[in-house]
Length: 259
Image (cartoon, rainbow, N blue to C red):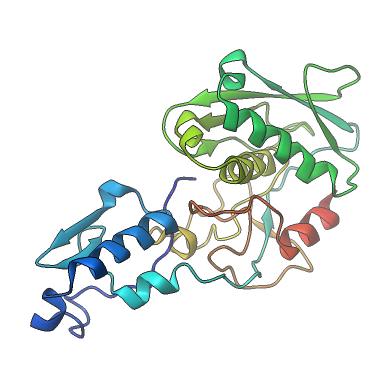
């Protein structure tokens, strides 16, 4: 998972509209708004460039003012959900999430962890999460830091959740809600959730293909819709800089079904 949002754009090589002299002489204020919208939508600054008065992402995808504004509109709240073959067994009822001292030194990562734990516990699942160290835990997950923006984790094995989540310290520069989103997402992997758009990462990332079975399975969860959308799930592959950190309706359906 990494910080990049989908965008409705057309390369000048593929679609000529908007690529003529009038577009090249767009006012500076319009250019600045496009860049501002792209940053708010989650594109890394080093992925945005201006050439001949036009704004591009990924070096060859031209972004119009209208397209940049559309990216900031609320997305449809529907997404399909997938799980791995292995899930957390019934012997696990209380999971300790133990942050390292370095993790705790980042205030927004620390606050995001509390909110992510609250997300799961608010669902009334057979699994509960607690910030550790604590007593009576039947499984433990270590919360550690890594470089960059985003996070990583693994999938359950032997009926236990994956034992580590790695969260990028660059998230300290983003809102607590974004931290909550990323940590909730990585904890989702530890209990068996695949990316909701695993079959086409471009839905949330703007580029990328099919992750495949990855040796762990990609089983559709009954009751969830059959189309993934940008912003439609905490478990989308990529996230933007304006995430709320909260479950969508399909996330809730998937959690209820599994746990």
